[in-house]
Length: 338
Ligand code: AMP
Ligand code: MG
Image (cartoon, rainbow, N blue to C red; front, top):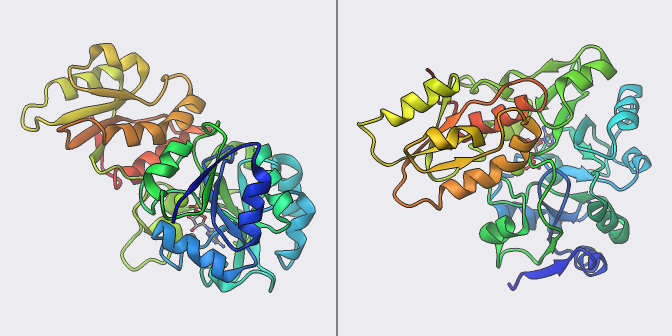
């Protein structure tokens, strides 16, 4: 199939393809999503095939107005309304018990559904013009770093999807925060730009799921099926080094046994490193780190003759927790204290 590249003014063309059961990559403020009509199982299945996504990994349903959630869930609870009032439109996904309008294909066999009202005006316009909620997982091949530009989508999915709406690069750069309201206390299943601290202020008692910072134990079934799969990983092996700049620079510059090494570091580290280095932002700016991380992970694979990249460990508060979570998964939880 030939993948059409549409401009951000061409949302009507995107909506037409979606209404006819096609799949279109659309920009959101987090990452590019691969969209299909959430009420059309045949269209939804095309997403799993294009991405190579395991069928038990559920999809997030995107809406263009808060009220549209009412048809998708059994009960739009008071807690959920508070979250929607505070954080929508924006990078927060809320999980509630699903209604019968949501098929098991969308929910990956679960009895819950994940819903988000995106902040990106082009995403909302496409949803509105299509006239249906849209499922839209990240528009990458399953397992590879999520796409923050149309070029990333093309690199993974050219020829496998009907179209891409190109609206430049994504401002947030990492996927939405996912919070489940189906647990005993609200639980963050995936950290994102809406932080633990912000959610706690609105809901009071919020927990962070163990799978956010730890590998799954043997035989443990995760609440979020996505957490059991390899994620965000470049082909190059990633190892996280936890320590300050001096320790980091020293460690890398003195590696002798491994020759083909690169660094995934902060802007300020670059002048001190003797190996090829890609920055994922300034040390003092976790928002910039989030924005740049996935592109940096993709750039690493373009450096010739590098088999291992040593990543500077980000701080873990605010949006930094989300940056750390993505890097941990890219590294397969391989962290060295230095
Ligand atoms: P993606 O759309 O690729 O950003 O991934 C969506 C993430 O949300 C995956 O990790 C899913 O496993 C998770 N997710 C979606 N729906 C649910 C649900 N109903 N219950 C738990 N996790 C979910
Ligand atoms: Mg994804």
